[in-house]
Length: 302
Image 1 (cartoon, rainbow, N blue to C red):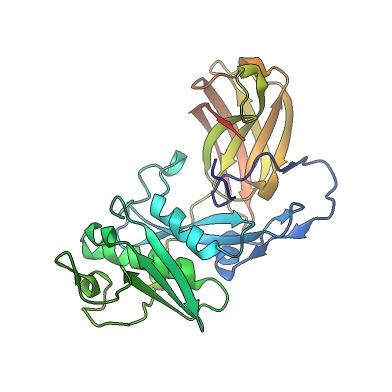
Image 2: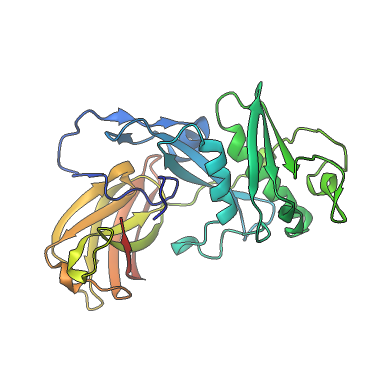
């Protein structure tokens, strides 16, 4: 579980009971890109929150990007944190093998600056060792520019390497990689047709949570079925490998991205055990999905 809510898996410790009336609920502040691909943002009672999209390069359709919804309470560093999350990729659950990881190992963000609507992202030189295929390079640039240009006030995006937009570093031409043929200081423009439409909602993983520092299995507090976006859960049942249901109350998590089971018998949950999930959901744009999947239970602290 990452520290900010900059993950497709929310803070499951902050949850609301589905049947309980909301108290002091406020609509999450969402970018136009978020609302376009995932509909109206959910509500929260945990403070001011921001919903946005990160565009990951597609492994199945080179040159294309896949939008994913993310949330954070930290507006001040939202652009840098979004880019750092982009660098780590999205190799999780039912999307395994569909998201490319083209950034070379060791690639870092040295800085993000903004002046009069122009955002400059400064990468370490390792990015020049990223896969050299033209379609992959275009996907990298589209992912960066589309992720940044959704935020209010951003009029153009520039990508730098070690503070330069042109020239040569370690024998590699910066301008060629950045897609402007060596011409310096050219703002990048995204290829909007590169964005793939989101698929139907998917179940990503099943994770049991326990308090940080808890040693005993019996201290598991909840079991979460995580989805890839906010959804309305029409049906959800968790069972063991033989189909026996786990008893307990089921809640909606904050941001509606997970079903949370408060088990009556926490001691039966062990890391790696198979958990079957039968589910039926609808996302905020009316896309419906249902299925039955088996997951290996992960156990994490929160």
